[in-house]
Length: 585
Image (tube, rainbow, N blue to C red):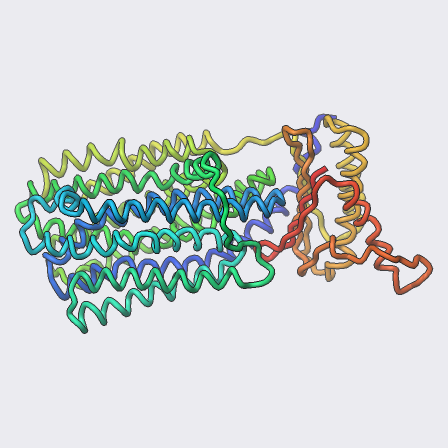
């Protein structure tokens, strides 16, 4: 019998876990994304209504600095979180926590250096961002805003790292709450400082910084909660290890590098070639802020998918990986289409919200709405391949969207047909989605004939069927007699213990099993079950009295004791509402 003929039985039932895990996180992540949308656009809304096109132009010219923050912030935090999830999925919690502390320390050091250097070179930086062609009032507003944002860069970076790692440590609730409260603080302070106290763009900058600080304070409470793994400690930085994580994160965050160059290029183009430079840059800033509204659904899908994809990838769980990608694309793309229609219908009041009441703004917003669903497809696909450690596929998609297609079209239209510049974005996104489709479908993980997977019901008879399949699999594999014996014992004892001691005879109770060999010669057994919180390794296994009826349950735990003795490593954690047990033999 070929191994490929006996793996992946009970196909389809395992999707139960993927769907439940995705839905549990997705709605909370949407809440956080909405809060982020409010914070991201509030500077422009308040400044635009209070100071008009000149204020919006200043905010728009400084926006590349925020893009720089995203490059480094997502590079360190997302890449580090992918590595953290992978290590946790393999039961290496100490290495995972150490990696978190290394990423945190390195990101703070890098951001502090950039903040100091940025302030020392503030004047040439403002000129580079488009200030060379701006009037003195706009330049002063740019400097006032940028200086404070640069000095406080480490606060932004800590928020990035805390948020991603806390989510991966199975505390999505506090992560979402921190973002929402931090963003609402930003929103409220914008009205108080800019409108109420009339501080101007500096008030908008202070509102953003304080909002970030509030978010960090809330996230810090996670480290004092029992039952989680993350804690802060001084760790020596392993530069090779952290740079590998940064490289993983950079495959997606690199799009912000191109976005930074794109914003600089467009601001300078519009200032030089548009009939009214200040107005066109202001409208462009409005469109960029509307993109925050347009992206919140597919951003939530990406953030929900990323840690789950890393976990499933570490488990060699292809079925759930494919189901996860389909689910994220379904929610992200359809949600974005509906959102785009709503924004297009209400484009006039949206433009008025930013203090611009003209036909140019409305046309620009509606042109952008054409592109939202195509952007969702590209972004979710790139995020997926980043999470499963295929940076080449993610990098190609990112490069296509943010450089190869984006720059030539924008430059040509910006120079020769400036009045139609707003239609460059949908043209770029449609072309990118078509080109990326070829990369995406070729990079989907192939079936691995060496990986065994099976989804059990809560029927004890199903365990017998499973054991028969496991034995056939082990006979066809390269595992030794001793290793095969231990694996069979692990599967039988753990599945039986879960069914007898944790399940409640509910129709939707499942155990998902994967067995995967490693290059080291070890074999990893991953078991995920839908029972209430149940750690089989905490079952009492000492001083058993086999003649006592009261010790009947403890007798069942003798098999667990044998697993502890025979396995090289064993690990349990409660993750995304399910029990996950990992045994290395």
